[in-house]
Length: 622
Image (cartoon, rainbow, N blue to C red; front, side, top):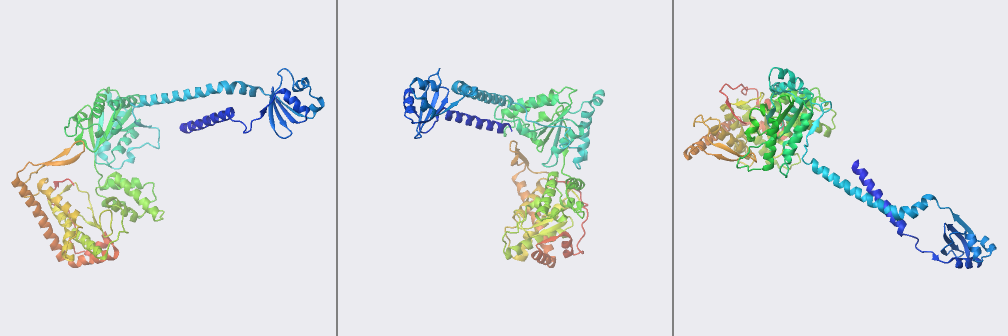
């Protein structure tokens, strides 16, 4: 609004200036002829004058032939007296139309004083005022350059308030943070017994697990101001600005105490100092130093809690993590099946969901999804329902959105010839059949030969229950399932294509991890190699070898053995169940997609029923 008013003012000022210039310097195209009063008297006697307009002492004369003239009368006499003095016949004067104009006071003031004298001073004054205003604004911006850019959420604003009820799952995290809420509400209770509440809380977890949402919920539960800022907002090209913003942020928080300061992505300024490979950065290090100083400067009675979030705790400076600063660390894990069900219900709360939707089934299919992924899933389903002109969201849209989030949108328009379509069908049928027969592999949920994202087709498998530990038997069955597409192409098409390239890559990585990381080989229960990471990029750049060349050959031999055994297992299953494979291929070529129930009917009930692993589970990273 201020900018609009300023622009309007500039336009009005421009038109005033232009109008003034036109008034001062423009005039009629044909200027009237100036004559003396004696010449006017002669013309009146000769009957040439039609009318005379008197404006003060100025005379504007119009002749009978429409010619224009002007003259000046005697200041102390009227026009009639002046003409009589020059011997004009009174009868001739009566034939001339005389129009006398009475000049107003404002007109005289404007013509004699305002336009010639005051207007230039007014324009100069306006210009000086504008320049001073711009200079003051620039000075204000320079002064605010070092001020904090934190956004404060008012606890009284119910529309923006978030509570623990809006965060599904994360029971342990809520219990840990519940003490922070209690301290902010009733600090005297803790102070009376001599307890010191942690000054800082560090939220750790993968992207999308709800770290920011949890921090907002703490502020909402406590009913205190919430100062939200990202770590990258401290850093500028000028050294010292970040530290100045940190000081201003904590100053604001102390004024509003009790309050919560939330620093998102704190690794942007809190990375390990002097890491060597990452290099130094004066501005970032000064900002980090100021954060450390401010947290040390908290008095025992200051009700300001600093909550920070990061998904890279391994790169943080040790000074941040020592007691007295970020005393408490709360891990935000990926939700389990029960938590995913609760999260889905929260995101479905205000949406027209069909009553037949089975939320538990959706939770089973979304293993490994974060809270952000689940929110995106429900939103994609809503958008898909609108595109299909539906008034409610059905289970079909929700299931399709799961595949869209995992693999990308369908590409039905992609031109695939008949031969390639048959190859894709055999490839996916090989994955699905082996995965359904092997007892330790994940159950098959869906098989499709419709292209999605970069995949020509896909086989969707998901465990019925979440697993945090995976056994050696599980990996062996998964290796055979991954090689199922490659083996199926070779056996039934008579050649191999580039389609299984990603499967082979995943299988090789899994087999090598079993040998070098999980101790699942004849080489014994030890790990091989140590990964080194580039701190400032956060990327793996090398692996330190802590084994000999002879051991490296043994590792390669073990990896090859796992791949070879999996290949033989897949080959035997497809040989023994060739008829079932061809039924699956035929159904895929006809319908393009087979859901779980239909797939189980094709495979038959005589297949082994899935059972829980009885082997000793070994910790594994996916």
